[in-house]
Image 1: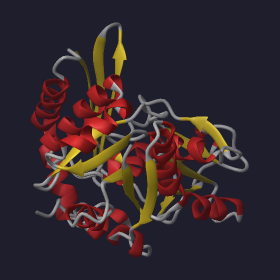
Image 2: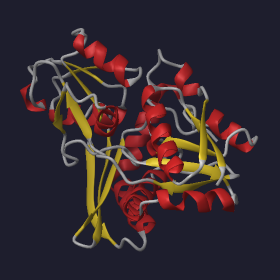
Image 3: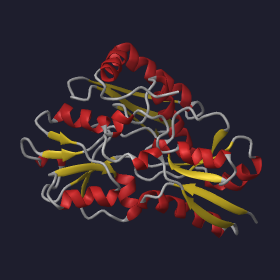
Length: 313
């Protein structure tokens, strides 16, 4: 059996994810250790993510450790991984997916629809902001950074009437006391890859890849390949107002996707089916359709207003 070193961010959720993969590997007889690596995204906590503009801000330092041979594999939230990996890396496995949808959290309101006029809602995601504003332009959207505990504490302290978080993180950490509603993907399309873990290794490391094969979930891989193809075709990173949610329906791969203006004034939606045998084709087709219907103008305007910075090379 092997001795495997896992690289992970130091947040509570990241460590849960790393420990989850560690336990699965340990059950197979491997010896595993976890190394905490602090990333650019972890160090910048007072600026909305969309304005940071650093491609791979949650992955770059971890990849540097991987390239240097300090770790053997990295465990990422797949939505944090750029759609195009730097040379020298590959995704060895995409794990079984937790709930990919967004969650409405509140102390006082049972569902999103109950929020009063002008309610203060916390999120630093342009994607979430745009979709909230599309259905409720009266809402007062405020930035919200920090780990899950920090965000929930701010909600409990009354800083917000509600906050929007990924359902997967709340469920993995068992912090569902304030989770009042799972928002349907048709109302709030999730981020590409949300709820899935991506296991990254050095490109060509056949031995480690073979050891990780059992972690790969075919349905999750097909769905997220489709979503990431959509995101890539639109030229967007995880901080721009783009949503993508693919799932198996009646033996076909179904993709819901959106491009939205952050103020909610324009939301382009696309819904289509494709073959699970070619998930990338489905994502590319949806991306082309959204661009042709005005998605390119929306994204150019977003970048032009400095709300999001185009991915850096």
